[in-house]
Image 1 (cartoon, rainbow, N blue to C red):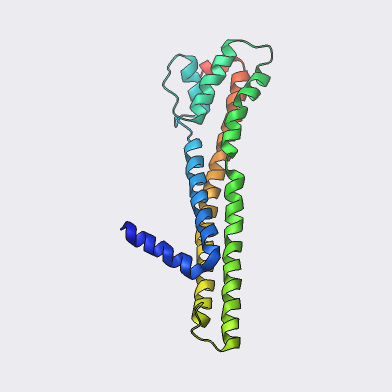
Image 2 (spheres, one colour; image 1 turned 45 degrees about the vertical axis):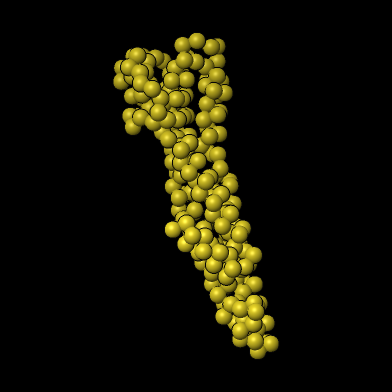
Length: 202
């Protein structure tokens, strides 16, 4: 199986030309970033923010399993210290969580934008080789001739789109999740800064 995979990669590299290695590297980095971001954006408990604060405030604790869980525990600890400006302390404490929701966002967007352009570059190279072969009337040159040029054009276009489209879809889903988490972090701060009888009543 490993040998088959290596042979397939060698075939793609051979057919696609020099554009293929950057495209494969882009795909690897893209899915590493998506996997890392997916792990970072774990919310934790499925309970609402108000319920989480209420349960932790009443001592019904459980080990934090995600970003919102951890933020609630930290926020309650800060509030118990009764700092003079609670909102400012919470803003500072939650800055790392908000930053975590944006991690690798720009990298994913950049790869999704660049991959089709790399594919297009391979397409142009393939078409140049095709027209050179037509001009020389060399149907089967050492570089592949007409068939080799067309093959390179199609493979690189396919690879560019194969990298960009899943990255665009999955990256968009992760962006929505990150936005919801940032809204919930803001809600945690609002509820913690509100009078305490509001949360214990829920």
